[in-house]
Amino acid sequence: MSSDYPKGNCFAPQILAIAEKHGAYNVRVFGSVARGEATESSDIDFLVDYKLEKITPWFPVGLIHDLENLLHRKVDVVTAKSLHYFLKDCILQEAVSL
Image 1 (cartoon, rainbow, N blue to C red):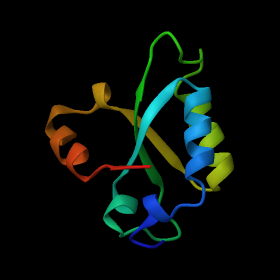
Image 2: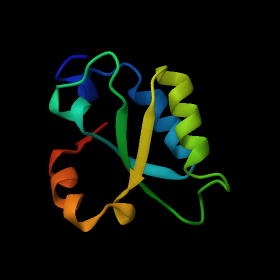
Image 3: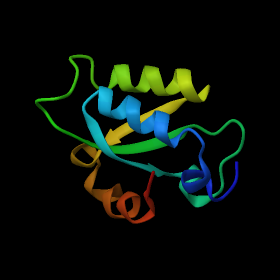
Image 4: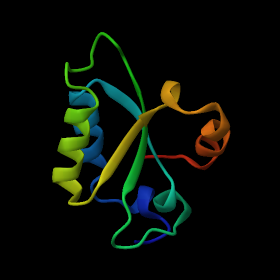
């Protein structure tokens, strides 16, 4: 996977549409993909914000399922509110918006 994955990602419009369908927005990639260190077996880590009144009853499981079906690889989805304080600053610093 190239180091410019988030900006060069042809799936970005679909990812954003799926996120919106599930009530999520401000979609960012972090982890090995954002650092340009991903391999073919790497998962994709997404950081999202959400509007409580717009999320689906199965959030974030439905979002993860739809993203995995689109991208054909394991996906993790976290929210800024759910980040452990020890990791939060690092993740927020390396996160790249789609």
